[in-house]
Length: 302
Image (cartoon, rainbow, N blue to C red; front, side, top):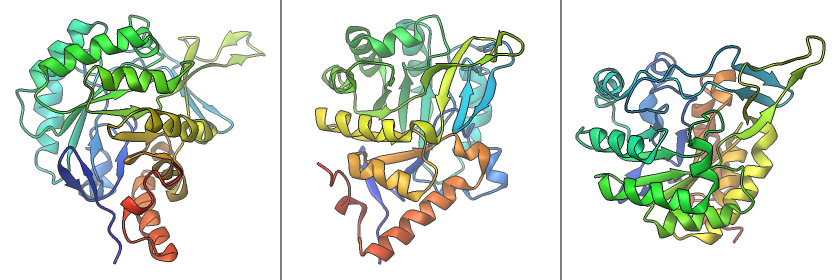
């Protein structure tokens, strides 16, 4: 009998798989294709205190082994999220991790304080690493002092566990992970997308209207494994790993590198059922290799 369950913030989750923020909405659309209660947790798309329009189009393009996006964290704001998305999720037996974004420390804090009033939220994931937002997002995620500052302020105001989502666009991911931990983060998640660019050589124009976008997909997976390994060595708090997870083996790599959970992101656009296939694949791997519990392989490469 295999045991896929994992413990996070004192709660036992069905399995170690969640969705990467921005790739699964809030699960409403995906619920037409699958039982979303099978996930270990659902991580929502980014939510800000007020509505954000996002970046101009075109803002998505394919790459040879993934995709680039410059959505710009478009979302209808916290009130619509509460009335529509959270109302839907509160009826489901699955932990809800709400991704929160902001242009300033004050915006992060305001959104967290507002959402802390609501029931049905398991934890907050604070997005300080999106490379598509010019007004502060990239700065918080690449400067240890700025990261510590926003982490500390959010943690002081939050009534739920705080997960800091780290940017890979840094020199030392271990340093950033430690800065978040020292400032009070309950967990970290990584990696977000890499800042990238494409040029249409025939039109002599940028492929994305924003010029740059976030690169995701299978191409970044080996880098994600390395960064999760380094970050998990630097901290004692839980780690949620992500980046180019295409199959069960990719998720298992991140867990072996030190992640407590793994997230499926871009591949859900390729195959809406991919996240379920990953969960089933992990169970099949465990049965095939004689692994009884996820804890047996978590961080085994350390």
